Every structure is written in C-alpha cells, then in structure tokens.
Image (cartoon, rainbow, N blue to C red; front, side, top):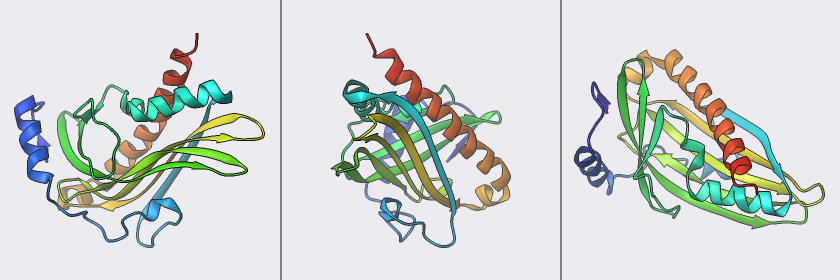
Length: 195
C-alpha cells in the first residue's frame, strides 16, 4: 500500500487486521531455511557483531526486539511485536517522498545448537499486501569454537504489484540499503548493551 502521508495508528491497526487471514503471496514458504528457489533475486548479508556467550545473549535479545529495524526510515508495526510463528506484522517504509506499508508473517523460528554453531532467529514471508514477493531470514550465529557472533540476513524476493515491477531498480536499491543499515543497527544493539 502506497501512501502520501504517514499512516496513523488506527489506519495501521485496520491494515493489519485486514491482512490477518491472508495467505502467503508465494508457494516456497520456509525455503529460506536451506535453499534458494528459482525465479527470485537472492541477497545474503553477514557481519560480525560480537564475541562470546554474553554477546550472543545480547544478539538474541536484539533479534527478539527487532533491533535490525532501528534504522530511521523503516518501522516495524506493532513496534512491540513478539517473535512467534504466525504473527502478522507491518513494515512501514519512508522513501522517495512517500510511504509504503507492507504486510508479512513469521514463517518459522530458529533456535538450534550443533557441534559447530548456535543459531537463533526467524524468517517472515510476504503477504499479498506487500510490494515484494518472498521471504527474509534474520538470525544470529555463534561459532562454538571461536566464539565469534555474526548477524546473518538472507532473503529471496521478486517484485510484486505492477508499481513494484516498474520501480524494480529502486526496490533493489532499497533492499541493499536496508541490508547495510540493518547490519549497522545490529552491531550497535550488541555494543550498546555491553557494560
């Protein structure tokens, strides 16, 4: 949904209620776990954000509090959303002199430990009221041997409605800008919590 002015709380709540029963806008739901489906642009971004158990706990808290969206031009709605499978959220983006309001739903949550790494995060997928079609995974990983912690952002997408297709170069620019800013937000979130 494209808007000339920032929507108020009531409009956002109505938007999310309308989207609550929508199905995903793509068939490869959950594919961001382990493969890249054909026919999508794939973006994979990763950055070191800390070291050791305490930083990993801070990173998990940052994921739970959606700190990767603390970038100024993107807002998650509701801003106190709890990470849980099936939760529908709105993503409000201010860009190029207008706003877009998009809907997504959490597909899965990751909380895994293996011999090599611990991983925590989640993925959400687009609903019909989204400018793009696809899925995005936000996770933090700790290498068990080195203690290094990374923020990992993985997405596959393709343009949705006609306006998104016409503006696809601008959409790709926004996606890359979000990845950059999101990585910086996660670095700041972990550093800020240190004593």
